[in-house]
Image (cartoon, rainbow, N blue to C red; front, side, top):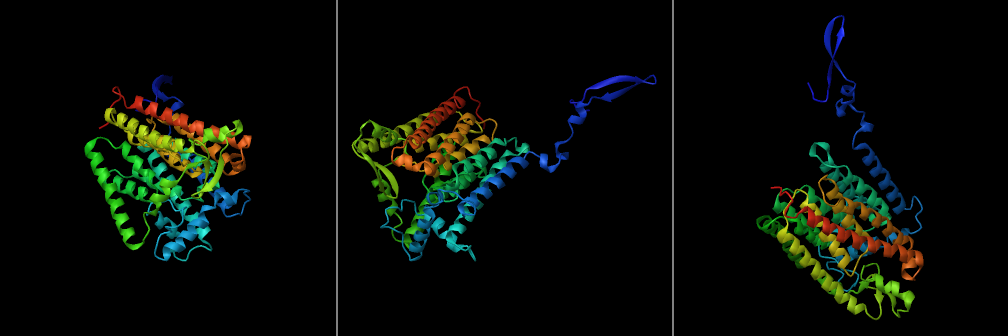
Length: 431
């Protein structure tokens, strides 16, 4: 008899017989619950509702005042798709700052059989499909029989919605899904490395996932898998489409985007007499004026310091089952706050990895993940809702941007501290 049942005896007509306490009824098999009371129902319903709203906003069925800002990149993708179909990369367009694999994303809506009425709507549909894949991956890991946690799917569901319609108007969600798949479904180092390579060929940041790979043998195999995909893809695309590496020059020449952490002091200094301002360069709004070149150099130094911090952690860490997730989040956050560019859609990188962390009850990053959810809500405030205030020194816009960046820096430091403690000498190494 189950230990959850407590047996009592009572005399009925002089005969002692066992009686089960009411808690036996409360302990009925959970599978007998109605489908609307299952563990997956609430978050799944919320995902469908929020994604429907995003799609209605992006397709103008429902009004969204900042629609043009949220979807402004998709017409550019469409133009680049046309250029690519002519047999070359847009090598003279300074806005092209993406690795060669991004060409596949730009071309994808035109390759859909039959297609939707417009490139715009087809692109939205493709991103939504990848969003559904990401949600499915998280739900698969969160199942009770996997001893997972439903917090991961909830964070992703709410975070993507809080970032707003821009999530369907940029291709970063696609890359985030590939990175999440590398962590959640790629059990073999070579397969994980290949997925990391695919993500890095579309947008460089998934290479950060290598930080979470344990020790030398596994690291070498995973790195070889990523390198094989990167080299093969670069050679194949370069041989067929000239100009595939032009993005490197444009990336090097970029300044400090005003939404980056490094630009925040300059924007705040405008009210104290800083003679600089902002201007459109390389497809973004950048800080221009005295001291900016010093800040650019400081970003490079900060990136190197961040790399040394990761190396110091890696050489002394004792792995747990969640270390690959937790380390990937910390490394990505470090890259975000030390970068010269921090576009709103970059929050999807952190959200995806944070959601993966939360699928495990043993993660060290739980409070960091929920802090990132707040930073995501502030991100939609600063762009596109209060963007005019950010550009022209409005108090509300500057408050939202400054608060977001302070939260990101705080989340990064907190993430590193918690990761360091969780993988210290007293941590139990999971082999």
